[in-house]
Image 1 (tube, rainbow, N blue to C red):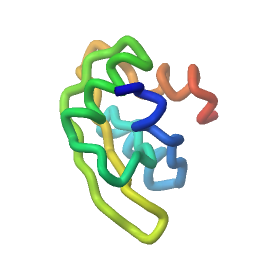
Image 2 (tube, one colour):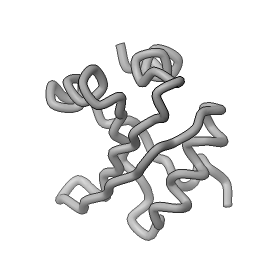
Image 3 (cartoon, rainbow, N blue to C red):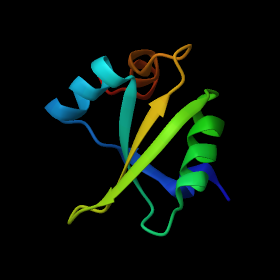
Length: 85
């Protein structure tokens, strides 16, 4: 499946900015039917990184995926590439 069909856009708030600094993680709004394994492979393909874990939750806005990266990849660098800052 196309990674751009799974990952809709990054979700940026104060809380997600703290997660980026403290937990090396970024948050994305994803397709509601996407499984964690699909989200992991989509993020790895889109940004050429290794993902440590994916946690999801469903809210009124949609399905949120908190993606934690392996220590050798920095969430801040990935955030810079996608325009979070």
